[in-house]
Amino acid sequence: MAIGLNEFLVVSAILFALGIFAIVTRKNAIMVLMGLELILNSANLNFVAFACFGGMNIEGHIAALFVMILAAAEAAVALAIVLNIYQNYKHVNVDEVDSLKD
Amino acid sequence: MGLESIVFYLFAVIVVASALVVVLSKKIMYAAFSLLFTLFGIAGMYAMLMADFIAVAQIMIYVGGILVLIVFGVMLTTKITGVDVKTGPTGKLNYIAGGLLAVMVAGSLAWLYTSNSWISAPVNETNTSINAVGNLLLTEYLLAFEVGSVLLLIALIGAALIARRK
Image (cartoon, rainbow over all chains, first blue to last red; front, side, top):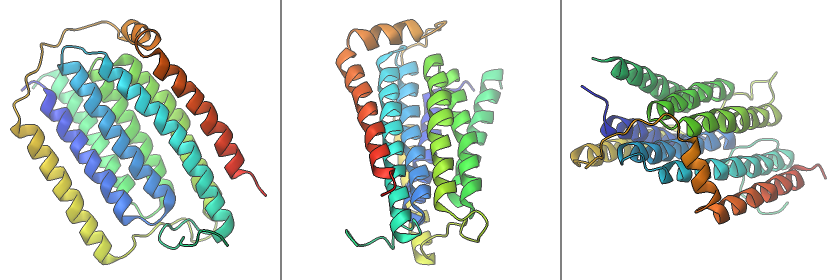
């Protein structure tokens, strides 16, 4: 059996579900970020798989590249915010951070 | 079963197993290091899909950039010597509901994908995609490319400003 489009799509579906699970169940903000990275990676895998099996359409690669750029910017800003939360609360549990100013 | 299938299933097992460790491990540092294997496995899948530039970019940006940032975040926000390195779920009910949601999402997405008969063009083997990617980036997507670079600059300055000690 040759490897077709469906196999890659199933792997990306599993990755997406695991990312959702991490975001929903974890309370550490950095674990939530890791779940977000899993979701972005699954979307990228879809882009590249469709690009390959759609007749080597390079625009899928471009979309994946821009997703990576946004992921880098997002990770930098989110970790800065997490560090700020840690300075104020001494923990980074997202379910206990509930005041806008101290 | 050809060589291609063996390589694909190897990468698939690596990706899914290490993503499971990321999601389920109690210690956040193990999760961060397990994310490394997930990202490398996905880079291998990109290479299988003949996206060589994306594979290298995945390794350089995700493994070399974002993962290092995440590990720094872990080390700066948890007490390594104390017991605080663990990250717990928010509760048993939340765990069950999240697991149910994840299974439903994975099942419905996989069903949607596989029940469709995709019309796929024949895969034409190319040596490298770098030429095509570079051409498109500097002609059709030039504006998005430049806006992306400005966005990265703004995010860098903003992150430094936010994380600064008062």
